[in-house]
Image (cartoon, rainbow, N blue to C red; front, side, top):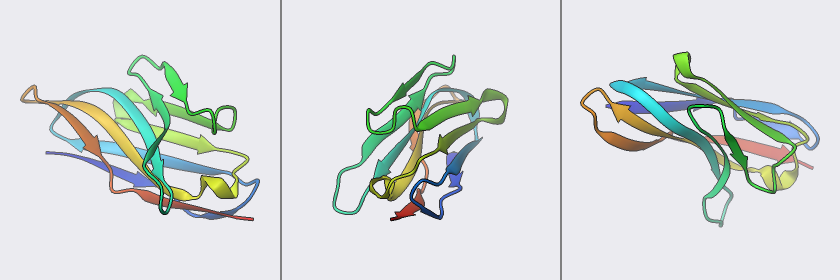
Length: 120
């Protein structure tokens, strides 16, 4: 059993900043890629940013230059620093991780989501 728990979502004014955290726990042998996705009301879930176990990052064009993804492998934690927030960043943000369990199963695990609301 592997769980991802996100935190850090909040209501913030446009131009403000938030930092999301996501920690994996359970029967973890190793974690490959980790990432953040978001889903706005009435829209499909979309990729925000990903990071490999070696630290290589990838960003959606809409957040590039404003958001920064990072991870601390020893803590099984990934972060998303969000600056210069815009109302269109309002969404539920989900954490995702590619996990190898202690029984050597490969799982794609999702968190429960954390709500970010940006007011204009």
